[in-house]
Length: 125
Image (cartoon, rainbow, N blue to C red; front, side, top):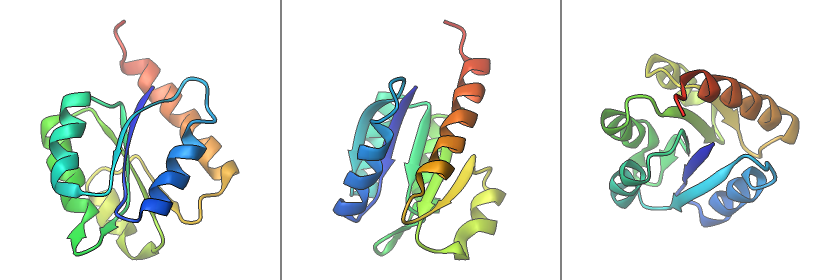
């Protein structure tokens, strides 16, 4: 399963990426701290899932993820954020999941398990 991480906090981005690499079937295809460059990069890489912070400095992770979804309609959006404030808006935009920082490995395991099932159902290869 291919995953792209978008988080403007480099430490948080590295932490999320590191946790995801524990899973043998996860391929981290890219990561970025810049929403403007991440949109095109993620679209070119075609990830199965996007792990994105709801707040990207002055920018909105919700806006960036919607732009990416416009280019990749089947991408699963997993928000990874420190605030519960964006949960309703995230799910209104069809979020796959909403994880709170700091990431909890048990909770991340459940999300990865759900992604495995969902990605497996949609794959044709």
